[in-house]
Length: 262
Image 1 (cartoon, rainbow, N blue to C red):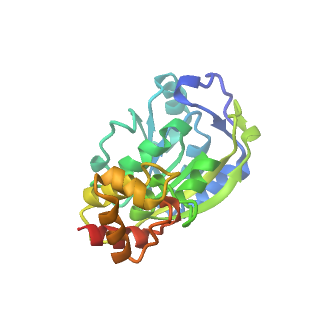
Image 2: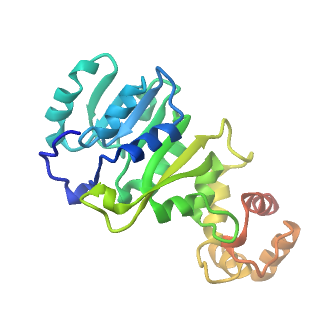
């Protein structure tokens, strides 16, 4: 294990992970094959990077914190043909420059999760698989089923098949975050779940979730600026109970509702 001579930067949400079992679980969840191209977001001190390279992956390490660059370059100089370090921020990084297919494997800052999911979902060159270590509560929201759905769950599951991997307790990180983490596994759908105008589809979804405590007839009426009587007719047409709440709907329910409104 590398000596952590560089302190984790709180503003970047850095929490180093060196636990061997957890790092191995990340690699297993990533379903790595010899020669896979992997984008690692925020390699930090390089513990996960080492595992990825040992599995035979070609690693493109995107690191925003340039304090870490000299040690990463030194540590992986022997992997010159399989390791490249890029200075940059995933929020502005151009994913279309990556060879296709590629995978993402990363222990990412908690504050970045929702933004990252949107970036890779909407990219013209998304990864075939993303294995992300994220806040446990967020991982559960992304993989939720009807009854506990959210805009994040609907929007992610629209593009990805989702699954949960191992839980990584907070005490395994340095410094430890306030909550536990969990491996989130995303497998990209070759085509979106439904044939819809995505902007219009998500407008309906966001309208439904605009007032979570209210019944759909009210939240949709407000969000879409339609009379409640008209919304009730649309819900009936889509075979959805107007007394239901947004979190109770499945993706198939949202599609039927979108089709009825369209």
